[in-house]
Image 1 (cartoon, rainbow, N blue to C red):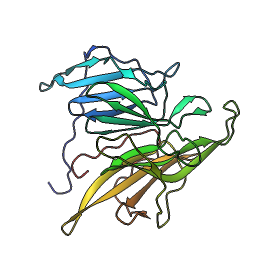
Image 2 (image 1 turned 60 degrees about the vertical axis):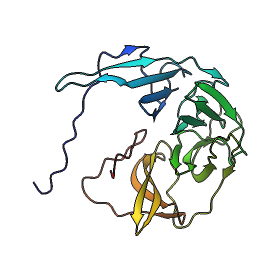
Image 3 (image 1 turned 90 degrees about the horizontal axis):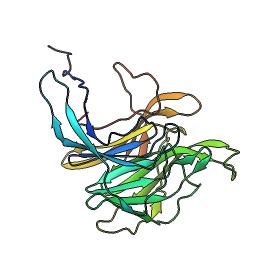
Amino acid sequence: MAGVGPIVRWRKVSAATGNVPRSRHGHKAVAIKDLIVVFGGGNEGIVDELHVFNTSKCYFRPFALATCQWFLPAVHGDIPPGCAAFGMLAENTRVLMFGGMLEYGKYSGDLYELQASRWEWKRLKPKPARNGPCPWHSFTLVGQRAFLFGGITNDSDDPKNNIPRYLNDLYTLELKPNSSTMCWDIPNTYGQPPTPRESHSAVAYQVLDGMIKKWRLLVYGGMSGNRLGDLWQLEIDTMTWIKPIVSGDLPAPRSLHSATVIGNR
């Protein structure tokens, strides 16, 4: 029927076996092949555990619950401290984690790499970013670069005297294959940028322009004293911000949500 979209069905994953993580928020999860890697977050304290969910052990049957398996890999190396509201992305078997909140008013500006092929953490030391570390930002893989946008910082040097400030700055991090040498860059952008915010979502996708595939970065929602419901687009080839015209059933303004690209949606 015209105007009817595809059916989307939720299914509860129940009876998971193994080391099931405790309830939490402020954590991050990335997918590496059949594995979902979950780190950090908090609930009655911030945790530093790395949990892995093996989707290849899921057995889906029609109208039945799914059974899947969690495990705790034996990690080693420069294990990061427990944190929440950090940025995390996956590139092949490499996971990058930046920033986050260590405790109230105390933020991290460290960059860590996890090699999932051997579960080894390594603290990287790229050229420092300007304006200090920022939690609640977005950290998105676009081609061979990581794009970090927005977040919140503490304008006080005293963590107990938290003076929060919302950010709308944009950083890029060049990801060189088989190299841990990295450098933060602050690219020149054009057009009106999104207003400062934290706890927003950002996803990257490609469009075909003639015979050329071009990257775009979409930023949605977040918090800036009040919850936001606006949508912004960064044209990566020209580094130009635009605010697209949207229609349909718009989501209610929100923060601390997630967004994921599946196919062309």
